[in-house]
Structures are given as structure tokens and as C-alpha cells.
Length: 300
Ligand code: C5P
Image 1 (cartoon, helix red, strand yellow):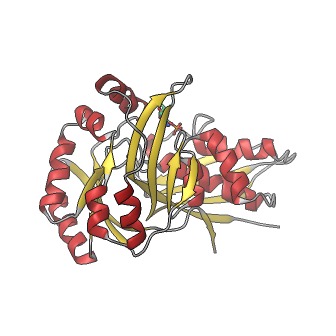
Image 2 (tube, helix red, strand yellow):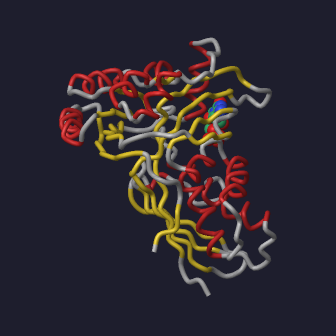
Image 3 (cartoon, protein in one colour):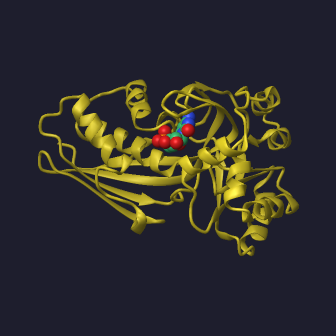
């Protein structure tokens, strides 16, 4: 019998995020390019009495996270059990967090994706990644990508995915902010400030990724949620400026923010960007990561 399953799941950054019109449920049509980064949360799933679902967090921001049915990770476990009719389902979940909470790097969605993979293994369900991605889209728009990983074009609500071919390794520096931004609040601010935009992905970005042209990728980074995120947290514009002045080839607010992502051509250049951001009081912490990396996967 399986005793414990450990799953590692990456964070994501949006290299492009174009925001279109809202659908009747209030969701925006998106055109996005996701990349999975080597900044990981880890989920351990252990057997528990039938009917008992327990969730605990350790690490980055753990104290602020709910552990009941309002948490996406808990909902992921119960959705999987219900869908697969696991009569004696029970699980004890421990999430070790390194992805910033409410940072625009899909931490909550990443944990839900990791729980789907971990419980699929623990309960011996044999569901395919495609099946888990379909379930994941019922939990949140970013969950399917956290299962797929690497680099992908996201469309629809961001949950429909087409993998993208990329060359080379991308060196990222991530500046985490004091506090977080709520995703629905940032989308509402977008609606207040802007008209819906076309959701096409810049052709230069797709071509630069395929060619491994890091400088061209940096120049093509775009995020329609940057303006509302900066309006809600003005210090972000200084953060972006500092990273660019320190030599980053591109800078972008990650998703709905407030984390900012900086792209560099070499690890050495990324280290200089990290150094400059570390001393800025508007930044809580700095992380280094590379992409692309695979999505949620079982580790030994
Ligand atoms: O799908 P998820 O629960 O991650 O989305 C969080 C919130 O972000 C939604 O409730 C909605 O306010 C906003 N959102 C949106 N359009 C999308 C995805 C998310 O407006 N395509």
C-alpha cells in the first residue's frame, strides 16, 4: 500500500497577458503565455481514515492560508474523490510553500494541481494528465497549466492550452512585494480603467521563444494587468524601473501581481538584478529561478 506521495509543483510567470471582454459569468477572455519556473511548492499526501480530509501549510505565508473547504487544495482533493467515486477516500495533505501567497505566481493553483497529482497516485486512480487538467479547469483558470508546465499559450479563461516550443534557458529574478493583491480586485480595476483589449499574443514573442532569443523575449513581455496592479500598488513602477536599470532585458508584473519578474541573459546578470532589488524597501524578498520546467510531478 502507498504510504506517502510527494509532489513538486512550480510557480508560473505570464510572459504575455492580454485581457479581453468578460463572459456572462464575469470571467475575462484571456490570451496569455505561461512559463513554469523552478520555484517550487511541495505537497505530501498521506493516507487518512475514510472521510477525513486534513490540510496543513508550512513555510512562506502559511499562517494566512485557510485550511478548510474554501482552500483550493482541499477542494481539489474532494473533487477528485467525488469524480472517481473513491468510497473510502481520506487524505492528510501537507503543503510546504515557497511560491509567494497572492503574488500573481499561481501559488494556490499550483497547490491544487499538486494535490490532484498526489491523490491520483495515493488512491491508485490512474487518471491521465489530460483528465486531471479537465478537473483542474473546474477549480481555477491557472490549474491546468500547473499540471502541464513548460511554456504554453493559454486562451479562453486561460485554461485552454497549446504547448509552445522554446529554445534555451531563461534566467528570472522575482521581486516579491509586501502584502499581496487579490486577483478579482485587479481584474475589477482593469475594467474600471480600460476597454477590453485584443487577446492575440505578439508574434515576436512566439518567434523569440522558438529561437531562444532572450533579449527579444524580454522586449516582447506584455501584461494588460500591469496598469491596474500599479494603480493599486504604485511602488511597483519603481520596482520595475530598478530591475531594468540593473540590466534586466525585460520586466513584467507577474499575472495579477504584485510579484514582478525580470528576465536576464545570463545567471551573472540575473545576480546583479537580484542585488539591486534586494536593497529596495518596496521589495520584501527576491528569488531566482529558471524556466521552463515541467508541471506538477511525483518526486521520490
Ligand atoms: O479562475 P480563478 O479562480 O483563478 O480566478 C480568480 C478570479 O480572477 C476570478 O474570480 C475572476 O475575478 C478573475 N478572473 C477573470 N478572468 C479570468 C480568470 C480569472 O476575471 N479569465
